[in-house]
Length: 223
Ligand SMILES: C[S@@+](CC[C@H](N)C(=O)[O-])C[C@H]1O[C@@H](n2cnc3c(N)ncnc32)[C@H](O)[C@@H]1O
Image (cartoon, rainbow, N blue to C red; front, side, top):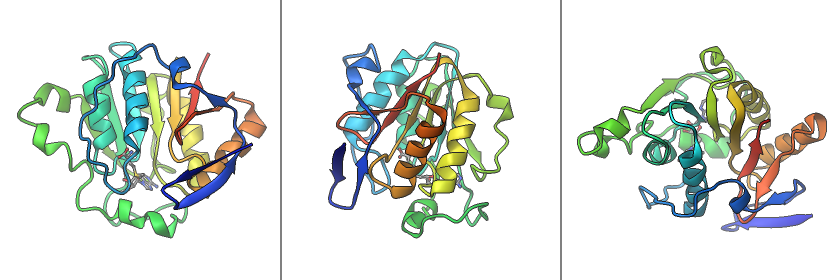
């Protein structure tokens, strides 16, 4: 049983087995875009791991992110993945009603000025990269994912941290991921709802979820 901490804010015991990032990707040289971490973004080390995994995605496949926020991870996925990949990123539209209650402390991520606000400065200089990104709006618990079933080489689950949403987003991710694709969750061990939901799912489904050591990422590669 290991305990990890994130800047003193959240702390839970974690029980999923650990895995080294080296076993999750073939890439060893990683580039990162947008170094500045806003409150709501993932840590730069986590971005490095995700970029390495994105670079391993088969060309011509799709990547799906639940939870756009300011677009820092979508942007990195677009830059890091092969050139013919598409990045779909889902976010709540402003003032949209939600099926389940959100956690009160995540409201600032929902009520931001603009979803994907980091894309703009690359629109001219890197238009081919930005054109890989497709913004989608909806509540992740009621969104129609059926066009994406079985066609995503990477699904990144980083939407609401409420327990009910993590369960529902996880089952959506399981439907979207293709064979030998990867699902990554963020904030395991950090947000109680994420930690509890993932451990319950693992207990029930025996998927083989693993915590990437030194991060709050949970990793699954499908067969
Ligand atoms: C932690 S932030 C995502 C951070 C982003 N993935 C990154 O790496 O920078 C969570 C995002 O999920 C969105 N979100 C929260 N609840 C949602 C829901 N029910 N459906 C869709 N998006 C949701 C929030 O609006 C916010 O943009």
